[in-house]
Image (cartoon, rainbow, N blue to C red; front, side):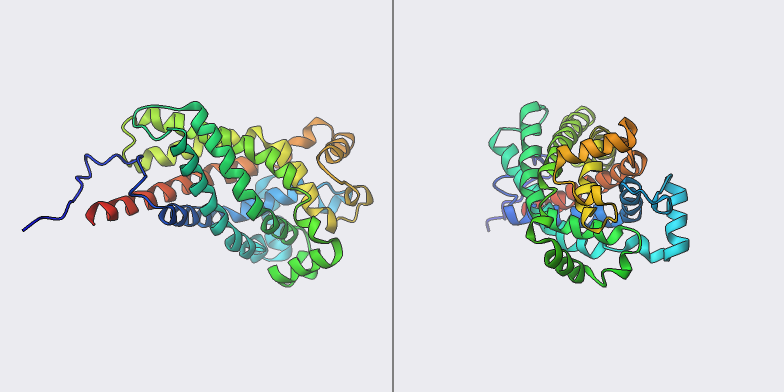
Length: 310
């Protein structure tokens, strides 16, 4: 009797996804990774948003991660640190599914899946393409998230849908995408730097590219922190654009794009203003990318193992 064609896991090339690793499986792994990443570090992300907002009211200025966390929890309630997370859950799954599916597809087309070889151009291009696709889907959810993270947002929005209706009714559809060019100016280099660093570190630590949780976790954390620090200035401007509709400051409300935001921020706070929220951004990103890559690679390994048994 003929035995099933079972692939020996030791001989299975972990990174050679096609044809055994389908698009649906790739997207499922990415969706799981995205939700795990965002939910785990959400409270620190909320603190980052508060610290980055340009505000002329001293009572609404936040300094320091610990001090800001305590202040928000003590004055608005501990659960206010998770306010707006429903928007992340709704958007992060589909967006990360598109993100990783695009990344793997482009990397495969560019020949970046060969074991023991590092492909600089394939890694950077794959990351950039993945970001452009996923951000187009995620941007409206990110706007809603940040609107719900601002001070006293509970008095303005009852829920994610209520916030979306309010923004659309008062500012129009454009409000959900006014920050998209700025978002891309941040996330394209962020993702290219992250994927480049991740592929470099993981290839150096694990030349055979077999599944190794410690490698994926460490490489993901270092790559994420490195990319986050370098792209903080664009993140500050993105926050300004996404929260301008709720600002009391007339000049902030009038900001129409990236250049206008840079001019206002520089005039108000100088160069240091472009690095507001650097610490919580790096603190959020390092474990988030570690979780994201670990969850993604684990999911990928699981699907590959299932395919090898069939």
